[in-house]
Structure formats: C-alpha cells, structure tokens
Figure (cartoon, rainbow, N blue to C red):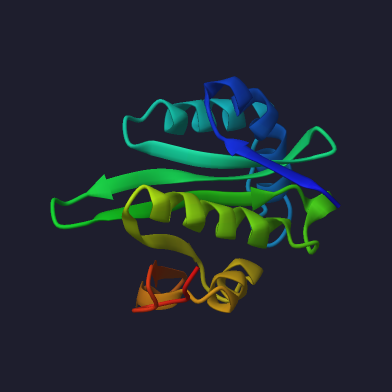
Length: 158
C-alpha cells in the first residue's frame, strides 16, 4: 500500500468532503452531514489565515486528511488539529497514523512545538491519540482535550 501525502489546499476541498461525510455520519459520531455542508465547512477552514493541513492519497484517491490552525502566542507556535479523518473503508490500515506522523514532521520543520486536539471521551479517536503519545490536558463530562509536545515533554518524539 503506497500512500502519497500532499498539502491541503482549496484545490482538494471537493475531494475531502466525501471523506469527511463518510467518516462523521457513521458510529461513533453519527452526525448529520451532506456533501454540500461538508464542503462548506472544509472550505471555511481552508480560508482561515492560520490554516494548515495535509491530505493522503491511496492509488490517486483521496482517503484522508488532517487539518487545523497554527497558533502563535509570541513565545511558541502550536497546532490545533480541528479534523483528522480517514474514509471508513480505509480505517485500520495505518493511514491515520501516517497522516499524524507526516503532519508532526512537517509542523516540526515549521518550528511548531506542540499539537492539540479535542475529541469525544471513550471513543476510538481518544484511544488513537493516546496510542500516539497525546496526554490529557482537560476534560468535560463528554469531551477530552489532549496535547502532544514535540521533544517528548508531553508526548512522543519524531
């Protein structure tokens, strides 16, 4: 299985929308999305000035993406991952891990020092992030917020 990674831009938003819809309309999320709504949400993210993302192709088919915002507080830059999704037909084959690792590598090259996420508690997503060295920073009754610090402070090392 040969994966091809590329930077996420406005040019691949339309190809990301079906992946987003397929991933989030199924368990455990069970959200109500149609293609137009999914594309509008993704296009909105891509148009943000601090947006950064990466897509993954398998045999020329876009099968997943990771995207979010780079935040600069003056002392350091961090990345908040808004979405990481892989089409359900391709989940469980290491594509999400490849996306995450490629994103961490690219962000490190850009001097971003940490990655943060928020997800629902007790889901496969939470387990996925824990497996990849994310540590809990805060939680509510239903949500968990996690952080991966480059260099091993709160997580793994590239």
